[in-house]
Length: 302
Image (cartoon, rainbow, N blue to C red; front, side):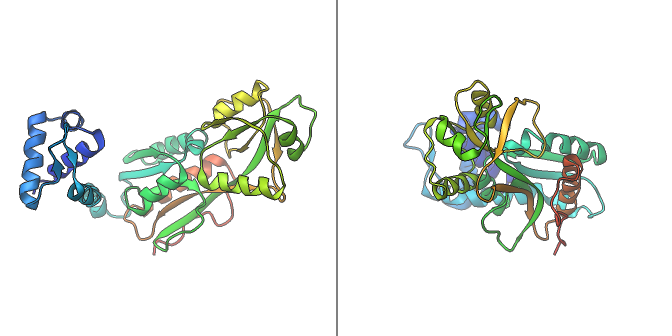
């Protein structure tokens, strides 16, 4: 079996049709059909339902797909596995939550590129939970995420820093505490980050605060812009490194005691990419400039 057949299968699943997959992998639609047929012959099983147009993966195909992804990932990592741990080269797949991607991660990646230009970094952005799942399924080498509630024994947590969770409001509002702001002003809810949302909702319930939500947004920048224009208040994390888009707002600690979220870099224990992840962590800690937590060095690769 040719590894290209599995790449084509994954492309069809991701792109939704044979024609779109052909564009994605750079071959003709007829070549896609031939490769899929060759794969089915090798497996002695049909993996597409051709009664639909375009054909769709049947139950066998859907069951096969995760294994196909793992095989392709293992194939692509052969060069990295063969490299010595002293060689600062290879492909590093990193998941990053949006708030980190719009603050300290770009500078850290630039520093990594200068220090180790042969490291190829591939970035996948998403929320905590999806990135954590990709990491557990070995589709990522590392992820910059909020601290998960539970960590499997095959993963290593490396704390980067703590971000206060604050109520943000216009600077000219006279209210000076979080509870009063939330009770007196319309509430603009940030609806992303399940772990963070759970913390905030639990704290609101504990304080018997039921803010009047007027909108729900999935971008901190959009929330900050709404607050800046006086449309309400919100609860968001205060980032370790401020983004370029910055508004003059009041930041009031939220919760009793004040809530924080811990960001960190998670990686696989015993991974051949461990030394590359270590290099990335060093650049992140240098970027945030001393605001990292104690114990934020990578644990032993064992």
